[in-house]
Amino acid sequence: MFRANWRWLWASQLSWNYERMMAPGYFYSVLPFLRRWYKDDELVEMMQMQSQFFNVNAFDGNFIIGVDLAIEESQGIKSKDTVAGIKTGLMGPLAGIGDTIFGAIIPTICGSIGAYMGLRGNPLGSILWIIVDLIILFLRFSFLPMGYYQGTKLIDSASGKLNAITDSAILLGVTVVGALIPTVITAKVPYVFHTGKITLKMQSILNQIMPSLVPVLLVALVYWLLGKKGVTSTKMIWFVLILGVVLSYFHILG
Image (cartoon, rainbow, N blue to C red; front, side):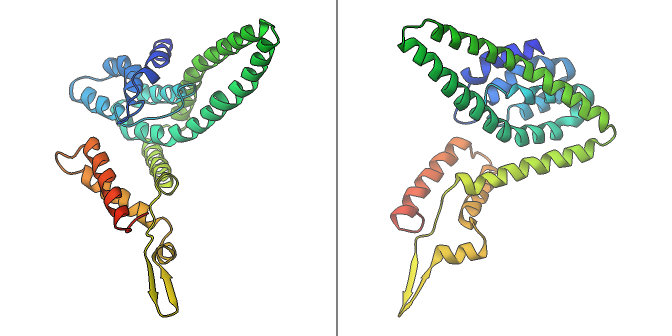
């Protein structure tokens, strides 16, 4: 667990990229254990799964690694879908918690106190911030073992129910991803139909059919295209960019 923690500490952000974000750092953190538990085709299959998109707060994201290691150690290759679902389902909530606590609350409160003391000529201000950083570092290393033991408890208490856990994890992941669509993607139809004194706004009609229908259709289109041979995420980024500019120019989407 210390080895995974150490790797996550250094690789979680250093390997960040726009295509899969923190996936390389996650993969690097669990790679020694994948090599220990799997061989040949199973190893390749799990390595591909662990290389999928992943993004979470770097301070508490190792909790997911702990849960992952506990489940894989117990269930092996059968845990593939379960682990993928748990990663997808937990990274959103943990990102929100980590960003709030470690990205906003602690720096704002402790940083303000330390800065104020420094401006008053008190060297304890910088010492206070160093102490806070050390405490956070200690806490970071405690999240992975915490996740590991919680994952172990999950396996022990749900022995023989791996399929149910897998289905629940997949459902959780799909729900989280689905909920992100209307909150992250903004696409509206600005067209307004006029006839006499009657005015119909196309977006209002679409909202009555299904709220956020246009974003859902766009995501479905992109998802379908990504399944085609030779289509990469980079190509889809350019496709969405050009499509957005063209549709916006002709006032089809806004």
